[in-house]
Image 1 (cartoon, rainbow, N blue to C red):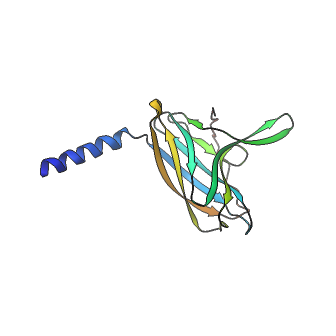
Image 2: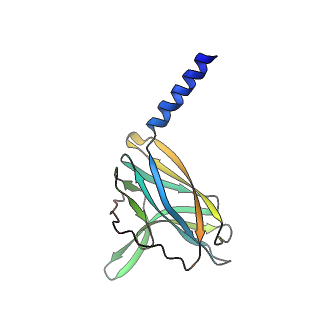
Image 3: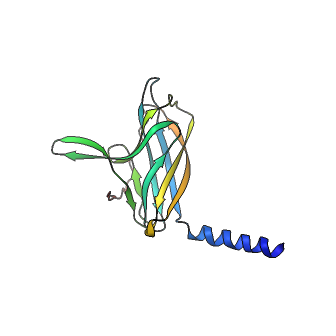
Length: 157
C-alpha cells in the first residue's frame, strides 16, 4: 500500500512539473447593463515556457472568443483570432484596444462585485493542451485598468 501511494505521489509530482507554469495577474471583466449581450475580459498572462492561448470557456456566455483590435487604415477594427502566442518570460497584456477575450451571447447580466469563472485553454509544443481555471472579478462599467508600463506585443496566428 505504501509503495502504491509513493508511486502515485511521485507520478503526480512529475505530472505537475510537466505542466506549463502560467500566471494570471489583474484579471477583470467589464460589468454589463441588464440587457447587455457582450462584454470583455482582460488580464495579464505570463508563462515560463512558450505556450499558446487557443481557447477560453465560460458558462456565462454562449460564445467566448479571443479577439484583437487593430487599426486598419483610419478605422479601429475588432476580429476573432484563433490564438495568441505567449513567449516564455514575456508578459502578455489582454486589454481594451488590443488582444482581449469577448464574452458573447451572455446568459445574464454581469454585475460589479461578482466573480466569473473562466477556463483558459493553453497549448504547448506538440499540441498538448492544458486548462487553467481563473476566477475573474467583475468591475464597474466605468472601470479603466491602468495601462502597463511595459506591454509586450503578441503574435496571433
